[in-house]
Every structure is written in structure tokens, then in C-alpha cells.
Image (cartoon, rainbow, N blue to C red):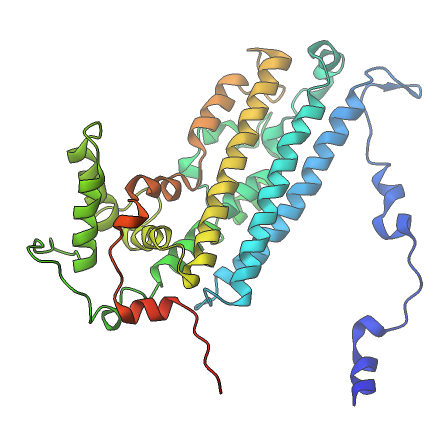
Length: 369
């Protein structure tokens, strides 16, 4: 029986031995660098080769990032994800890999910055019409993570088919891609599915003496938590403003793309992150915030490089260069609101004790058979 299973395994089929260069397509890969400054077999602008290789490497890593995000989306889009199961562990692992890839891409700018402004000027005019804005994969990464067109800084700078914009095929593919469910939307639905505010978990909740009656829409837990949050604020804090934001964000309008129910779940996970059942959910939320931070670093490093290379001149694709990039750094966050939930945390020692039913549900238990 074991022999039959082994024979049927596709990995056991007879295959010819692989050769490193053939498997990786090295010969074809090394033919893809075609500097425009090459004249009669001589490279006039030495650093154009560096410029091409750096950006081709970016695109290869973008492909890997999209590969990871797509796989994570397949898990998060399931009607019921097991929050402490193997699938969620894989999602967290892959998002952490994406974080590390972005760190690598940010360090790659260090290599590109070994090119001086004069070195860049040797071939810059040859790039007329081309721009980093035209990276289809980068726009797909942003869209897949949840950056909506209407939330971008100056979307008209790149979402067009005129000079400096996309060709018709890329424009159509990006437009189609932007209609797909994003990781942000999947995470919001996942947060809203959190079952830990169902009545069965709170039957043995103990009200504190003299605790005020809960406002409309508040459970006893959130009534107590709001009071504890108010008590945690210092004299330097604007209490009326912060309490107003607390009510608005978690019980009325939500915040950014996130609805109140999802934000309450995110806050609850962050507060009780040490509970075994919340370790993976917290790691998931934290990895998304880290990805957003690394994306912001990527945009900022690009801005610094542009300032260093061309100052305030117009970009090769016709954009305002530095001005656009500064706006994108400030505006194009995806999980800013998720990160902002930390504004409403209190110290561990002041956290309300959870009811016994809920504590039991949040902790792993092992019993002998």
C-alpha cells in the first residue's frame, strides 16, 4: 500500500536532472538588461546598468509580494477562518515575510544612492516618458492591500494613459485589479466575525458597584472600559476630544475604511493579546501595520533619493517629482486607523477581568483521555 502511494506521488515521477542555469533561466534573465546609452558595444553611461538592475530586482520582489498577498487573501476570504489554526499561522508567517522583503527593498536604495547626480544625468534624458509611477505591480500591491483610488494623493498623476501614465493594457488590468476584494476588506470582515461578544460569554460578568448605566449601544464591558480609559488620561490630554473620538470611532461612524464593530474587535485583541487565542490575531494585525510602515519608508526613501538626484526638477514621467512624492508619503497609508487604535489602550494592570466563560474560550485546554 505504501509502495503504491509512493508510486502515485507526482514528486516521485522520473525527471531529468536539473541544471542551475536552466532551472532559473539565467541566460534569458541576463539578456534583459538593455541600456539605452549603449553605443557600438560601449556603455556610455556606466551607472545605467545599475539603474536597470535595481529596478528589475524591485519588480521581481514585487512579484513575490503579490504571490504572498494572494495566498493570504485565499485564506482570509474563507467564510470562517480558524483564528488559532494552521491556516492563520501560515497567513501571519507570509505577511511577516512581506515585511522582511520590504525591509530588503528599502536597503536596496542604499545601493542605488551610490550613483551620484552627475552619473544619473548621463542617461536621465533617455528615460523621457518612463516613470516609477508606471510600475503596474506596485499599484497592484497597493490595491490588493486596500489603498483605494479615492484615498490616494493625486491619483490623476498616474491613473491615465497620457505621457507618463500607463499603456492601455496596464491601465485596463490595474482598473480590473482594483475591483477585487482587498486584504483590508477581508480583515475587516474577519474582525467583525469575532464571536467573543456573544451573550453566552458574558453571562457571569460582574458589574462594579456604582458603575454608570451603559450609554445606548454600549455593553457593560465597554462602559467600564471607557471609564477606565478616561481615568488613564493625564492632565496634558484633551479628555473631551479623546472621549468624543472613542465614542465616534468605536460606536458611531468608525474610522477610515473600518466600521465600529471591526475596530472594537481590533482594540479588544490588542488589549488581551497575551491570551493564547489572540496571539495569532494580534500578530496578523501587527504585521499589517508593519507592512504599512515599510511601504511608507519605501516612499520616503524614494523621496529622499529624488531630492538628492534631481532636486525640485520635474520627473521623467512629467510629475512634479518631489512635491508628489511628499504628498504620497503623507497620504498613502493603508492601515493608519488600525495603527491608531493604540491611542485608546490602557495599562495591562488596569484591564477589566474577563468573565470565566470567555477566559476559558480564549485559552487552550488539554485533558487526558
